[in-house]
Length: 112
Length: 444
Image (cartoon, rainbow over all chains, first blue to last red):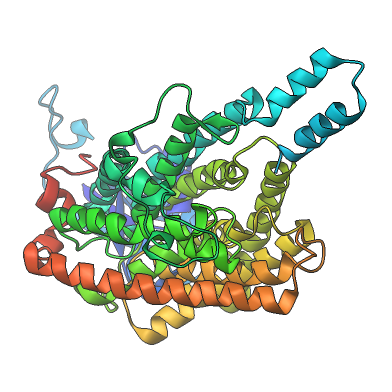
């Protein structure tokens, strides 16, 4: 099992969610996050006082999937979140040791 | 002014229409000041509108611009000032400002600057007492709302670092020494210092805006910049509040300007029209200035521009015509934009919410240009000489700046000695909401 964590542009969330549903993903966790990478921040101006905002808002998606699904999940996210402009985000893939469904106590693949 | 046609008619009736003795008697009685229900109704509404400017208008306007940890503190300051000034106005403020005993037209004496205490505790104010054609109670309350908003405007200059007790003490002293004097000099009638000079100030360019703006600048200088200013970012916490506050100010200002006619007449109508025109022009003036210089039009910009226009047309309403107001608005919008952005940055003082940049600069532009646009274009005072009036207006502005500047400085120093003006650095970092009031605005 793998945990796929993707940082994407916020406005691409709906597209990514639809793409993930299409490949059979049953659930995701979404977090609003801030950070910086190669994309520059922006400036804000209030009555002549200019502030550089380094940390940009992004959306983090966590998906736990079976090994067989990993490649298609990565494809789905990449396809849906790409704008070909700087700041499209990154995907991280981790090994996932164990999954437990709290309600039933099921573990492993059954709990996904 | 609105009594003159009635008097004229009464005179004509007395001279020529002897056939109708009953009517003649009726009209003669009307020559005495008499309650006019139309005027009274409008002034009752104006009182409500002007109070609405401070709470919640100005409170919201300011609360949106400070950081989240100081939202309650500025709202609290505005609310407390509204309460304190109402009480002081009733106790002695109205008397110091509007008692006319000892005043003599053309004579400059002590009573040209301050009234006596003959109306202290509102002595003599009854259900039947009149001021012109409206109950004196309505006039007194109308003026009370001006005495509320003027000190409340100063709050923006020392926001986010003033000690609450120091703020209350300073406001009480400043109201007593400075505000009542300015009101008396301009509006108490013949014998008042500015009145006799011929300074035109319809609704409070000198009394309210230059007055509060200069006091604000001096306060910002005496108390010093906020910790971290100007390097630490201090972005506004919620410009939606600010926009709502500016909109409430805009609407409430019709009570301020059109209400200053103290009648429901043509003067009030024209004051209302020019107020709308100048405000709209100034909002666009600031918005386009920012759009050109920065590349984008901003919410804070257009809201600030509207307030700058309202300020600038305050002394001019009732004297300038619509096209004069339009030009005045454009000039105020652009002028206050430069004062609040470029000039403030260049000079380095920390007038947190631009009380000087908007109210003093807008007030000065308005007060001086009143002399120009009231006497030329479609102005309502074409009989006055433009050059002479411009000089009279300028003198009025200069005297206000010097008097208010010195008096405010002395009072601030006095308060600093008695209770200390500033909260500690630790409290400032924590935020005034918690440090001064043990509350926070957002428990999310």
